[in-house]
Length: 93
Image 1 (cartoon, helix red, strand yellow):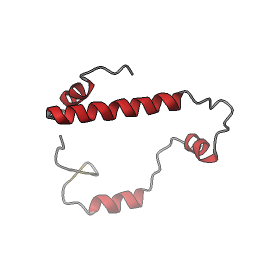
Image 2 (cartoon, helix red, strand yellow):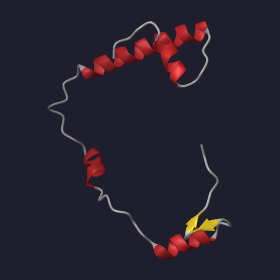
Image 3 (cartoon, helix red, strand yellow):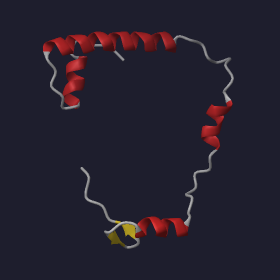
Image 4 (spheres, helix red, strand yellow):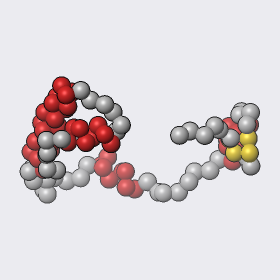
């Protein structure tokens, strides 16, 4: 990522956060340090490093829903508001 002078200010605008001039300067410096560290990591040759078992396990899990109808009915029955065999909750925005 190319660092520009107003990166912190732009990030703050996207996050709808107001920053003081001191905070902008602080975050700019922290972002520069972070991206410099990422560049150092990117320079490391990992082509000879073997994948660990934990990394492989993440891709072996079957992507299938687990269904337990009795448990689902028990959980839904604990809520006051229900609709079409589902729990009805307030809108969250």
